[in-house]
Amino acid sequence: MFKQNEIEKLEGRIKKTLSIIEIEHFSLNEGGDVDDFEEENPGFTQYWIKHRLKDLYILIQTYFEVRQLPQLLIQFKNELDCQFKKDIFEEVQTHPDAPSELKIALLFRRFLEAFSFFDYNISEIDNQKKLISILKNTGHIVKNTNCSLDSEAEIYKKVKWALGLYFHSCRLLNKASFIQQFKTYHPDILIPELNSAIEYKFLKSEDDNIDNFLDQLKIDSVNYVNDLRYDTFYAVFFIKDISIATPESIELAWKNKDFPNNWKLVITGHHISETTKNE
Image (cartoon, rainbow, N blue to C red; front, top):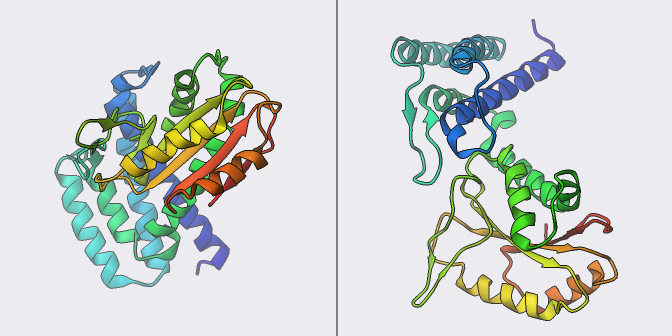
């Protein structure tokens, strides 16, 4: 009989194994779009995925057994045995802007989603927290990637690379469909799997006017509509030096602009304590 802590450990192994499989599959299939990706031993990643899928199959069978769910276990074995007999690397496209996913991995997720530990909505909240944490660490990212700090683009490209390690789709899409009558609006970073878009503003000298930056963002907030794939927007202010502006002054100016509730402010920089508003 499994003890509660053993069941929790088993849940953790299942979630971690499934996540690693999906990451490796993404790297294998989309590596051509990722800087510096090259399979060191051609064919090994696919071999590794195949065997880890079999390991995951056993882990989930064990989980259903210790949960004493015989009917679910039978259904699970029937469907997965059928998939294993076909093409184990069969792929499906679940979103027009997302990379193809392993059908068998989606089957695993379908059988697990009824359990709170594997609940998608909970994972979504965790992923949003992870996203905010990475954005708040922009200063750390640019410092450790030798970013030149010459422009906003230099900064958000480094952050986009870091985000791509966690969120598979963010580095694949170059634009969204925020199309108005005379102009199409393009956020700096898009993460379709989180329905999120990110816009950076770089304050690099005392000549930069915070109100002007906020007015630009307010225009974006009005025009980032009519693309149902994105419903959460992050405005990231990167301050080169604390003497340019304080987080408090930016937060006050942000509040006075009355941004929509689905816009969130993140303030970061080399010499700023991590802070965020509207989490």
